[in-house]
Image (tube, rainbow, N blue to C red; front, side):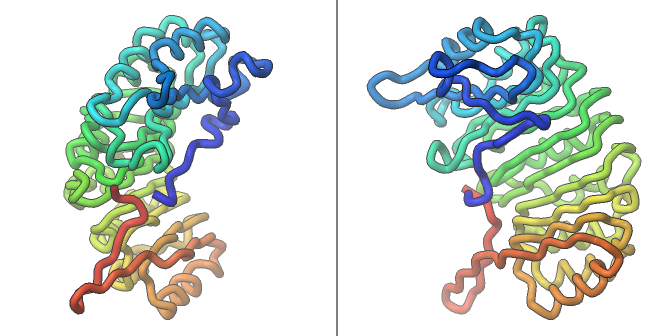
Length: 317
């Protein structure tokens, strides 16, 4: 979970913790902040998210709110995000300027990423046809049936295990404005059962004609993903490719280098990897003279047990 932190901004707006500062300092203008809404469900005076939500809508001008970050909404177990989705949907006639939503902004101290219980989050997209950014943290119980949305530009899923059903739903969606797609595929132990075949419609290109950044991250099958990406038509339309946080070894990196040229990219992110120094140097030599910014930092955690080497994604439980 070292790579999972509270968002500091959303939609280019600084995060403002409403529960922490409301009543203690002057609130910013409604459209000047990404409003973080989170409760403390424990202790002698546990807070109720519904009360916080109502107080938020009564304290700011809802019509001016541009970005909302939802943090902890209750105890992790048995309390999925369906209530959050419902509140957002019910407020659609008041939050008329809303352009960005992130659901599940919890750090490890609050809940492991696999403890965050999600739900079908697509009603938020249906309720806000002008939404431009949508992010979700946590894959447990997450559903994302195929949707059509004309204005969504950024779609981000952070998970220790992203269900294959979700990946297939994304891949079948019609998102003509989508520029930035980030999928943390995770590990099978925590529900990450997507395979390379599930990514095929995305990798084929044409599905998302505006796509410029593709992140296929935090995967225990990162070598297979890298091998598929090496020959994927979608790479030609990208300016940024991110295969970080996963179990990328020399085999996957070598396949990537042996595929189509990557010199048109402005950035290639492979940080948190299991690459040898010779392969790291090969990547730098092949790409950096062409102006490609590469991130090859951070060696992943290796554990050996009875002669068997185990490698781990950056984020799992």
